Amino acid sequence: MSRPHHVSSPTNPRAQDPAPAAGPSRQRGRINSLPGPALALVVVLVAALVLYGIDWLARIGAQSVLAGVVQQETATTDRPAVGIGGPFFLPQVVRGRYDEVSVDVVNFAAEPLRISSLHAELFDVHVPLHDVLVGSANTVIVDRATEEISLTYDNLNHYLQGTDRKVTVAPSDSGDVQLTGTFDVLGQTVTASAVAAISADQGALAVTPIKLNTDTALDQAAESLLGRGLTFLIPLDPLPFGQQITNVRWDGDGITVALEGQNIVLAP
Image (tube, rainbow, N blue to C red; front, side, top):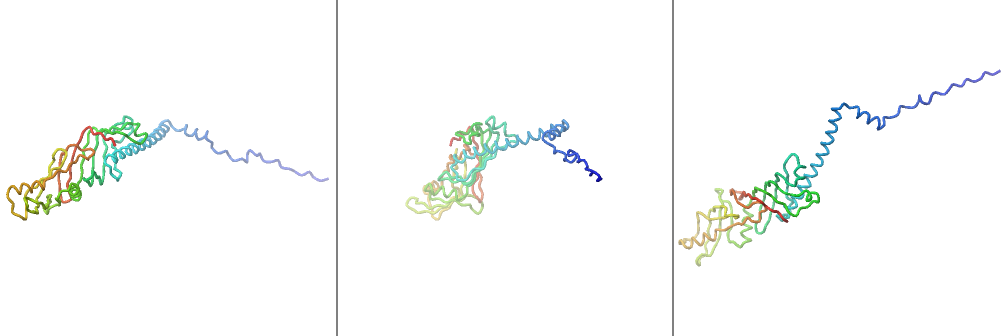
């Protein structure tokens, strides 16, 4: 009589199954299990990152709008560099007024005048929130501005040629501005040079000869006519921000002019 085969009972399948992975409910549980101060810190950090991103995007948008307005106003081919100051930007963009804006423009040409570089500091600049959102502005109002421009001697000579003046400008060995020209004076062709004084004449630069030197002996009347030929104005009214000249200085590289203005309207 054969013995019956012993059949072992199967192992409990539940005992062989791996433990289920932690699901979203467990993860939420872990977050909720954070101590109160730690959870508050996480929330604050996330909110700060979101606000920082919004602030950064708003600043970039406003700077782009202002750069476009300045570029159209100055008709420069190079995009102006615009920076808006202030650690917190959103309050400025919401109220539509920016406390301080810096502007840098290179190769600004308002023919026949060419300007090597322009730097301006603008205060209380009005740009509505709507204009920033749509990415363009029809009018920008600036309560106050300071501006500084650099004119090279090539810039000055380009202006003189464009206005049909028979004068050239160059730095002297002593660092002064020297004028040279050839003129017909009372029937004589006279070549003259002079050290020039540069001063403000309302919204223009007045260039006046001093220490006149000629290759021909002249009487007082002829010298007076020659001096008029070496005297000229450089209007600065094409400048977008400066209305009144506050300082003029020069060296071997050119002339630097400081200006200021108030209640400026930019309407490209």
